Length: 326
Image (cartoon, rainbow, N blue to C red; front, side):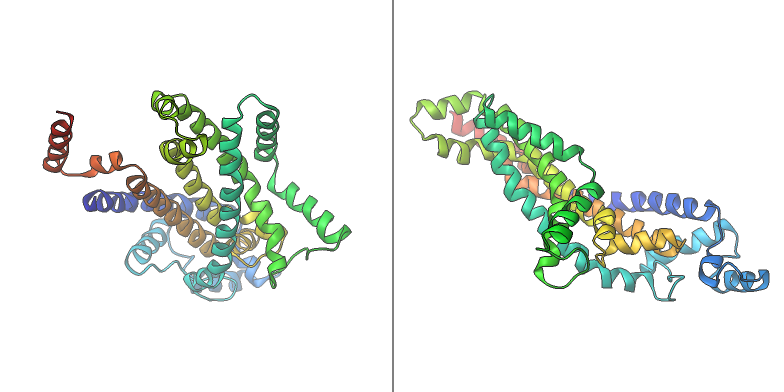
């Protein structure tokens, strides 16, 4: 297991190298000079040249990219923001708690709603509830986040005046953004849960459990869910990483001071160092979430854990199983 984790961590290195090369190349060759965004449109050529020299943008492409790669891998130095001369890592650290809290709340909300709905829809297959929940999931997965955010804002903030429209403060400020961020994961997790439960519930061991007189609730909890949870965990892991890295629209609409709003502002102002830093951080989050999901598999299904065991332990497990069969 330790060798598998180490191998996956080592795989992250070339992935991160590829991400850095791609995002650095895109921002470097994007038309426009960030100096004019910082100094103003009326800045002289001498001022622009001096500023580019100060921040190191006057050097050749490969020199800049090489220095950036070395700083990222040796010191986790993501550069300095053009807007306020603050280290990008410091800005990420200050904005990260907001994005993490929003991601956790929305993910918990989506899990608590979607898994029971998916299980109940599978158990009540081809009923009115099944058709209604499937249609609602399809509608939720196809609904744009910005449209839902604006609808919720107009209904609950502007018309009913129950909740604040933007900003961060009391718990009320988190309700609308959390609902907006949770709707798409609810639809995806619910559909995945329904499909996975339907696949398991038709297998022979479920019929055997019913023939032994076990209650339907126990069969669902002890047998069906346990054997159908692997695809659901995968989708939950993807949803959590998306909530951490894909909250740009939600944070921008609700003016939430998280990573998404910081990235949106950086794109508008051509703050390339912040864009690169956010992208590199997002890539790290996705890689680590994929690793965490793979590790969770081994705790959910012991059969997966044996795949990571050494050949000698695997043979011992097979021998023990054969002896028990005799």
